[in-house]
Image 1 (cartoon, rainbow, N blue to C red):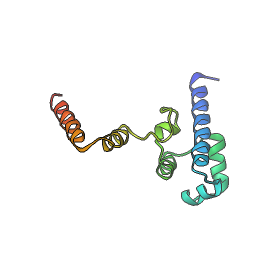
Image 2 (image 1 turned 45 degrees about the vertical axis):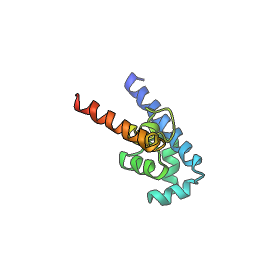
Image 3 (image 1 turned 135 degrees about the vertical axis):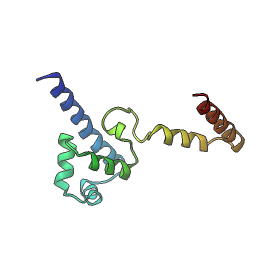
Image 4 (image 1 turned 90 degrees about the vertical axis):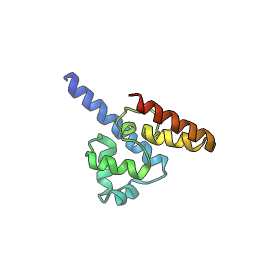
Length: 114
């Protein structure tokens, strides 16, 4: 088996595992997932066994379960971490207002210097 085929097989296996993981983490059945995605339970089972899922469906899964595409395809190691923007916004919201203002000013200044 060529390196490319092996890498694709490993990527699909990762996607299959993580699809099942995120579904189970939300306490959903394959049938419930099928209703959300407007397909059959058999199709969900297939996605979770072979990882062969289209990009549009992958995006819907991420929207439904609040995870990133990077997580599902194995580029991010934490479930539900979201994009950098989402992570930054969550962290910023936890700061007191004066600190939020200071961080925003720092980011604005940093952006102007580029």
